[in-house]
Image 1: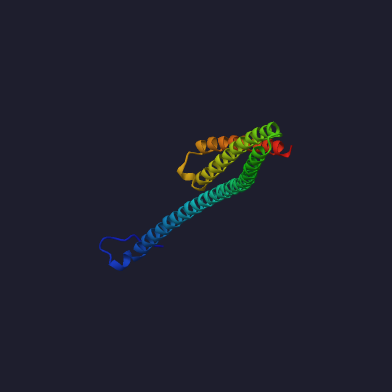
Image 2 (image 1 turned 120 degrees about the vertical axis):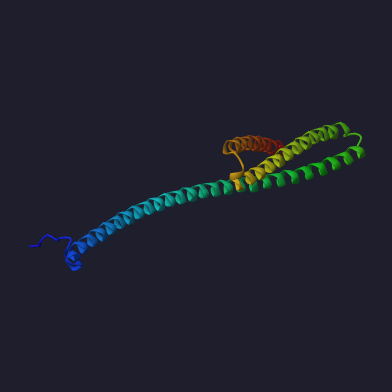
Length: 187
């Protein structure tokens, strides 16, 4: 049992009380440090999970954007092939018109027949030129859309979507006109 310590007691008599206080202070400090470390670990884990979710979201958006860009580029390639075909047919039709014009000049007896053919071919030629212009416009708009999709951060997504639906309408009309032209040329 401990005896009460008086003020007259020697400094060595106060030692057990000082040690006990020292241990209480050290234990309290270690407890505070442990709680603080636990809170910091919890916050860092939470922030890490939020970053991981954000990275996954950005990655998914990038894959979607890449797929849309690839689809648009494929459409441009297909439309460019159609433009090339129509341009070739336009050149062939122009050559044919010139040949028919020469034949008309040489044959008076068939002049009316050839004149009708020239008019028909001129109509087809005009239609082919219109179709070629429509397909070129479609390709130009597709390339412009690809530019917008390549740098989506620079444009309002709603405006890009509106522009994209307009491009689809222009391209659908050009494709339909091309089908009509092909049908007329097959006759």
